[in-house]
Image (tube, rainbow over all chains, first blue to last red; front, side, top):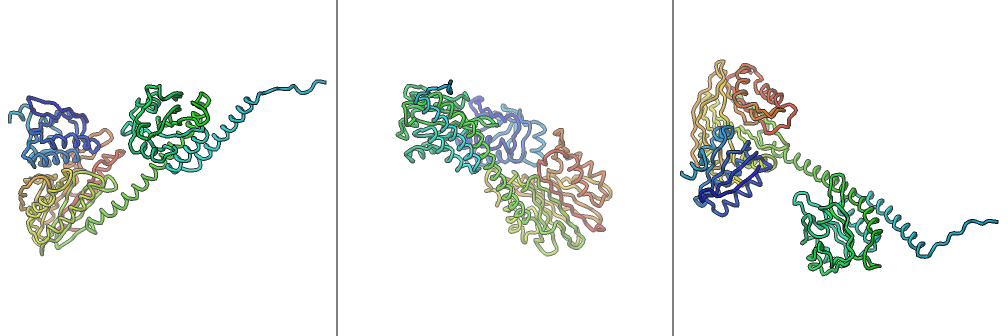
Length: 109
Length: 436
């Protein structure tokens, strides 16, 4: 898994690629929680190049979301590929996370 | 008469030969020492004490290469002052390419430094911290079968100003044996640790199973419930439970904890004990999951639970069903099999939400199947997953089989044959008024 953090129109975007499994989640957690710790909001996470996510990866985003909610911050997940969106919908995680079609959609929301 | 030819040798030559014989003896002793122990700490100290003596050096050290951090760390440093050894072990690590040892590790070549003070590669901080004055040193890479193991160094010869090429040759011979001995000791240490971990996991597994109901079968009046739970690893994150929260009712829970391994298992154990405490006296599954949700919202690391909780009237077959982010139940009724369309809430332990309870009535011969995603996320050798729809097709084709749950399990096992089981697999079957 690769993580690239960039500024897009003044907002932080975390672009992920590859598989987010139990081996990669600790790295994701370190990067994500560092941004949450700095109260980076909104934080847009771009899933476009993510090929797989398991429950440890989802739990990492749940932790990030809880961290954000604690100070009223926003965690926005965008460009989720259809296969991964199915997992989100199937387990009703689409009711938990703020999900948008693209980075721009999230930034304009 | 011609006598034996006379050969005249100088005293210096004789001393030189004697020294070489002594060195060879010492090398043989080191070789014997190395094979005398597999204890990593003993080996390090023994070998380096001997090396210091053989090489007649003031100090010596071994830096081990940490493959995770890609740094060299002092493992043993033997010098007069114990404090200096402690300082090196606790405070100094070197990157590849940093200092003499870093250079040796990076280039995998020995290095003989006659005057450390005039060599730019010398890492002066070590001397500054320890108060030791390095004049001459010899550093040799320790290379085992698996690549770089570390770097061995000897510092300051006692009987001369600097080490020479002969010292370098002897030290390299010694280090070839040391490298293999370290590697063997590391393998041994790892295998001991693995064995310890295996035993710990076995105990954890037994403890975890003790949280599940004593029997996977539960029968009250016309309701029969059976469960199968297979963990992918020794300890798993799936759970099921049968309780009797109020008179005449049975509570059936199936769940899947995010995360695997020991953390998943511990969380699963906490959930079952919290659930049993919370669900007592509560006749609505939605209320019970709501209370569990509040309880689990403080879970660390974003851990959560997907679950279905059903409360069944054991006399009438009336059910109340609550789904929390879990794969929906399947109903096998009147010769058909279908996915139940029940509104689901999010997984438990994430957000403060209300969970609805949906009523459903079982008829004579009906069966309800609950499963965890391990059943349809199983992969075959090609990396393809069974998928929920295909698993549903299989269930539809075999809906009338008495041993349906067992058949599904066998089907999943056959599909993923030759691959490592990636997720736990749990199935719970509720049968109403069926002929046993």
